[in-house]
Length: 224
Ligand code: ADP
Ligand code: ADP
Image 1 (cartoon, rainbow, N blue to C red):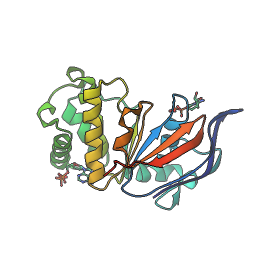
Image 2 (image 1 turned 120 degrees about the vertical axis):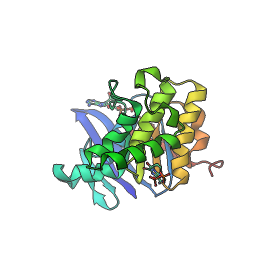
Image 3 (image 1 turned 135 degrees about the vertical axis):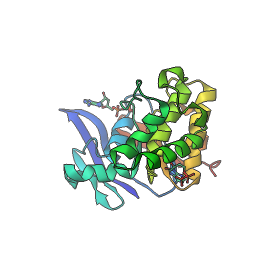
């Protein structure tokens, strides 16, 4: 479903975020992208979404070479993806419900349909009772689950989550990961980056990045 072929990314002269990365991810996997800060995890996720392009090599999603997509085709790719990236903050002046409805409103769904689906998505992350709250009144873990609801409301095939448990205590981090794992159980491919290694056993596969290279990759014995 996702293929990296000899992908390197050089942001500026001799600053390599990824070096000769080749990997292949099948539908339905829950991948944990591990490795220290600066290892290239965010860059790898952004390449799947077409936010960054490889300097050399190719990335394909469902057989489509992302690097060759015209700018106009990127929105179609992104609709298949649920993105939980660091830079995509919740809108603080709108309710939780309005935040989750947004991706549907943008793609032209009717207000009632968007609301029904947004409420169903909030239910999946156990936040139905917070629909009318403003994001500031929620805990960090709850805000992260709102971001998950917003990411899955379009029924994506793939969820990309960049450090979704950063800044959360263990209890909240567990809730966020359980929410993601529930989507994997429903058939959604999940790729989650984290420098926090306490959750590695929840993944079906761990890919370890260091200095822009894949230095290790293993299947978890405990994964369902
Ligand atoms: P991680 O997510 O593992 O922390 P990143 O992919 O964010 O790693 O970064 C990998 C390397 O690329 C780091 O050295 C970082 O400083 C560099 N880098 C990331 N984004 C940019 C950018 N937009 N411009 C220049 N260098 C960048
Ligand atoms: P509905 O059919 O009314 O959308 P569901 O309970 O099937 O209700 O889905 C609830 C929410 O979870 C929906 O908003 C949907 O977008 C989201 N979702 C995303 N991906 C999936 C999936 N693979 N399976 C089920 N629900 C998903």
